[in-house]
Length: 116
Image 1 (cartoon, helix red, strand yellow):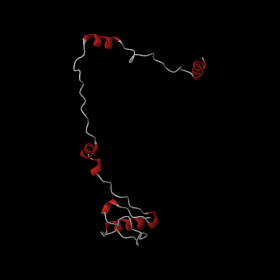
Image 2 (spheres, rainbow, N blue to C red):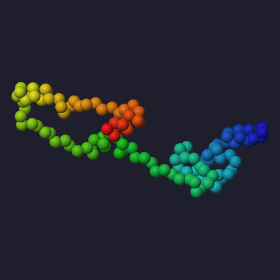
Image 3 (cartoon, rainbow, N blue to C red):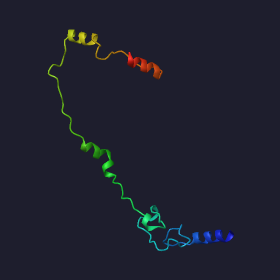
Image 4 (cartoon, rainbow, N blue to C red):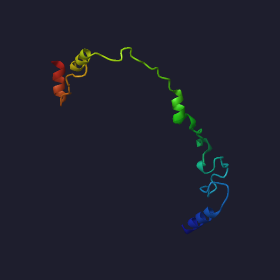
């Protein structure tokens, strides 16, 4: 067991161009890939794949604003409404007030409500 730790420490202290995890030589046939420390070498070459870089230019807020359409300004012809129409609109609340319907607390009561 001590030999393993001594071998591990001596192999770790060596500086070379390969990944430091390749101390046993199992990955000797693989070449270091460009990109430095952000890539990991795998023992099976068929399992290796490289993801393309993500473009950050499309994610900026300036790019999102350029895609938006310009809004059209809508101006009403009548800028004031008379007092009678305002009073009728304020007194009529049928469009915003309704009966609150909650579901019954049990399935049995819900079934009874649906059948009635």
